[in-house]
Length: 255
Length: 93
Image (cartoon, rainbow over the protein chains, first blue to last red):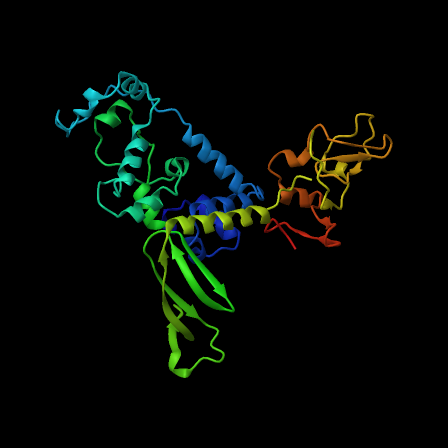
């Protein structure tokens, strides 16, 4: 997370919680929200409120049809599929009851593409599916690009879906450790993992490396590069399991 | 039929402190029932579901509660120990 993009309102709350900017930088938006809520006394309500906001955004009605002409970059041939579309479908789109944006995203994912039509591979595309439409709609900062006829008939101004951004910025990586050693890793998309173990007791001198601590000092560690197995389904499964444990930990206060 | 789950913990302070309502008989001196989400009225000798959950029905201003002397410390029945609520983190120790 780019800390510089956070407002003073949020940053000051996080700093009051005792978090440094470096610690904030590695938090997810959901975790930042939870910390913000906690600082304002909404203990254990962050996850629930975040979920409710996402749920409401998912059912947010489409904005009214705009009468503003939109530049058309598509030929009649490009849009010929509309002629063959069922009237029931077209009218639902015209009324804003059918979100063709999400349908288009799903179709692109099925083709192994990102929202710009670039091939990213079926594995990466499938990992996109881990994000529910609610989560997709809730995250900010993705620009769908030029408006087209579909967006004109069902405009989505301010309704952004950061499919590509979410996948790129929040890869899911699960690392398992046993006996103080990293035993393996699985990820939803290709990642490089550097393992730095500062527990050097019993390590051979030849294996020790000096690691820059970022404060002008160095510390010795045993390091290696871990190869993560790419298995988005397994990564999602483990993430959900961890989320369940987390939910259990943040027990309800209700007696 | 509603499932009654045995309570695994209870707050050290009485339900009334948390603004939980009295029994339908009017007795405000209720206690935590042995069942979750229930209170015990020792005048009626019955477990009952309170009409509302007092401060637990909404976001809890734990810091303001701490200033007012309302503690969320609780007794863990399974572990037979008191768990202290840490206001700053919202977790139990």
